[in-house]
Length: 219
Image (cartoon, rainbow, N blue to C red; front, top):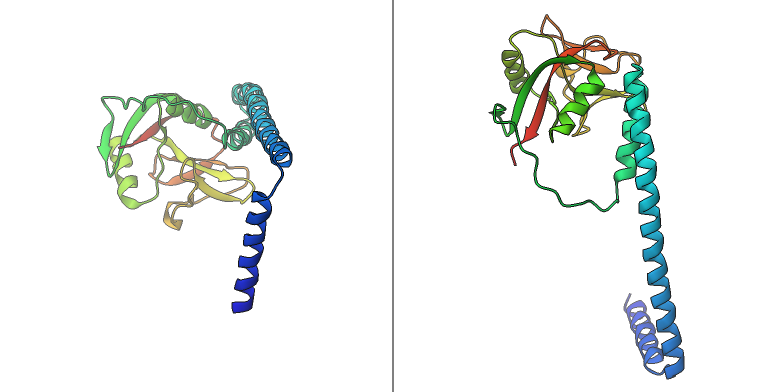
């Protein structure tokens, strides 16, 4: 171990000495190469980011078309690809979303019941446009709270079937809820969840218009 340490220190010392002893012309040449590489990488990153933005715009159109056609699984698949492409893109600083004044605070989040019935994908989009997301149900307290505020109406919430892992996940947290908050009727063709009239978590196609809950973190 001691010999290896001495050898490593010798190599580092040798490299420093070589760097210090470089002729001026060699050092300038290497510095120019370094500057060229940094500039090229920076330009390449900018080009890739711009290309991604162009593709994102087209994908968002595809997602909208799939939603209008009622092909919700396709719309969700495109949305997942959009989320993946956005990773690593520079983000513009924006003001935090304004939480609706009539949203109700509960356990670290604000919730709002949207009574206008829409399909599951549209419900998810509407929540995002308001700066939130479809409410996730991961525990008994949240379940009881949303049931109470819905006044017994059926509603969509933020749980869907990830077709790759074949697991139900929260739309934002990507967490799998405890088994008591999984649908009683799971199935590959039933990707979107709602609370039905019997207050049960039920999986379905997500194409029938229903009210929904949006959620915003409290800060």
